[in-house]
Length: 366
Ligand SMILES: Cc1cc2nc3c(=O)[nH]c(=O)nc-3n(C[C@H](O)[C@H](O)[C@H](O)COP(=O)(O)OP(=O)(O)OC[C@H]3O[C@@H](n4cnc5c(N)ncnc54)[C@H](O)[C@@H]3O)c2cc1C
Picture (cartoon, protein in one colour):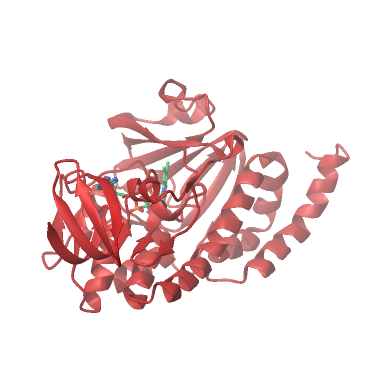
């Protein structure tokens, strides 16, 4: 049995970010990852400005990747877009992000899959698939969407069927035509196009149940025709929505996707992972203070993502509003990152959307 003060399960953005944040305050931790670094993952790879700033505070002064100016929704011939008021975000290929987050002064081990854990007094004991064992004073579950730590703790809650969506990702060798992340809407699914490099376009697709690999971009035939040579395998993950009973208890805490997830449609997952990692580093060992900070960090995400999910079902109503009032969209992009007042941004949008809703209801919508 090996003794460590802080054991982090999962070496993705949340896990490595957490190890960095703890190290900044002089706390050593050990990160255990079941795969081999650098890690890839199904992801749109767009890091919001708030996430880029958090990455810099975590010690990545020059994050890799390409800048992107904002987001642009596309439905048929209609476009509605806005740039970020805070400056650009960055599209960072996941293996590049993973490589950049590793630091020689951190302790980490790959090819270690955690299978079991148990509480022993004020400590946790953790066992890998190969039978290796560790005892720690703080266990951090940063093991992603289908967190083993969360399930072993009994903190997993069921996901309602109507919230079950799956994400897919494929890269294409071609020059991106938009410096914003382009989001194509069909009403039942969305395709997210990220400018990942001068000659690289990332495409992420999010769709509901009953649709798999063979339905790739079926809802977007015109877009599919426009795409170049695919690179690498088409990969998927889901269901995206994961509900949790708790995020912390004495001696254990969940961060990143392991701490619960609603949907990838607002592209906040990486930023939240970095912000939570930073908050844990700043508040350790006071987990109550961390949980208070955590709640503030995720509140806007759940509200804006829930609304975005509802709005994207009705593009015919919302596209004309968003295209006519790009400044409202810009405010919502800021509110989504916790950088602008949520009630004011949503109130402004609601005020403009009401006439469009009334027109739709009266059958007068274009
Ligand atoms: C389709 C799609 C598009 C997305 N687009 C964006 C986007 O554009 N921008 C954005 O910010 N976010 C996006 N996200 C969300 C983002 O990918 C996640 O929020 C982010 O990866 C969370 O990081 P994490 O470290 O919590 O989890 P992960 O990145 O999943 O890392 C968890 C790590 O834990 C390891 N692990 C799991 N179980 C064990 C175990 N038992 N033992 C040891 N290790 C283990 C895994 O191998 C993995 O490396 C998207 C997600 C999807 C699905």
